[in-house]
Image (cartoon, rainbow, N blue to C red; front, side):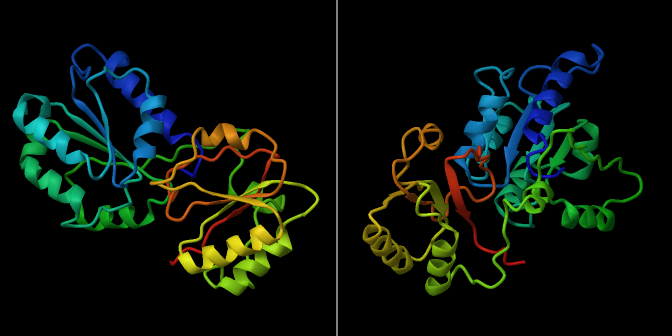
Length: 277
């Protein structure tokens, strides 16, 4: 499914379907659904937890660094592995052999035979599943049951094509945004000085950020940092309030692949580096 189509809502529906709508002899009972991601992201956990409201208080959402806690719990309560469902969101991240997720599943001792006998099921969810699909086709034998399902877009869906065609999204081909001179030129070219906005910039280089701050101060604008260590309180609420002057928000490595940013007229530039691949 494309980004923003509704994968989190899909997880919620799968949870509801497996717990409430399946025939009595197929319903998944007790704590037998595990929702996790290959990302190391507290934001993913918070957003998914807020969306999946049917969970019991003891049923947590896990990311890469906390999945080991779930594994330990399942090893203590091995009966929960029977008829278990693992739902892995952003499954293309950290999915290679010997990475953390793989090591956790190895610790559970899940061989092909055990998975089959205990009727353990997996649902992999991704907006970019191409590599995983190719691996599936290469490695899974014809006796195993699997399928690929595409989540269709709704009529009001606005994805990359919409934003690009309506010129909300610009590919900065003539700029290398990791270069300080290009970054400064790009920002100056795209900021309307008479119309204050919030500008969210991914700038990882400390020296570049310090030099950008000098320019910001010269223009009498404001700047803030929103990172794992220096979070802005009620960040989303802040963006809903029109700024009195241009305000640049540096995010460094924050919001990499799991943040749904609600765009509104108060937001100006959202600057992201080119993908490496």
